[in-house]
Image (cartoon, rainbow, N blue to C red; front, side, top):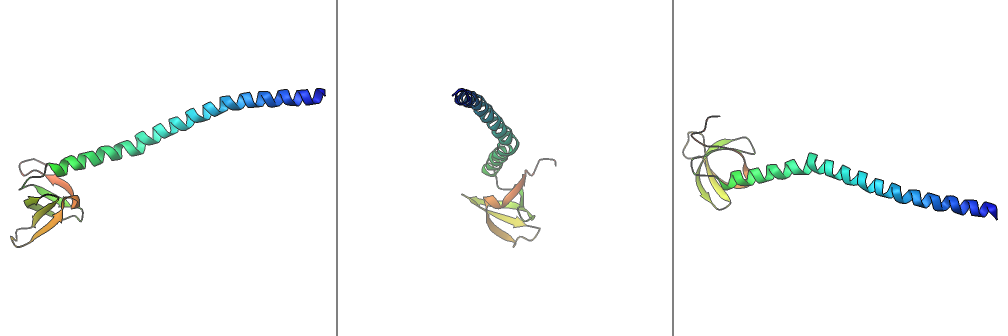
Length: 111
């Protein structure tokens, strides 16, 4: 009988300790999630907001670089579509979506 009492007391002490380790584990996982958020998700959200602002402020005459690496000048904007003129040839005008633009340079801005 005494052995049984000792075993149940040890089991009770073990479950009390498990409650403390559960809280510690939750705190560690919460801290890990916070660190991962600030390392990966937050910068990505900031970059996405920056690109949305950049694309919403497009104007005719801006020099843009497309995602494929071509530089051209915007000659018309219609909603989500822009018409970009490439090179000195006035006949090379291509309509494309705003999402295909990766960089924008204002004509008077120094690089």
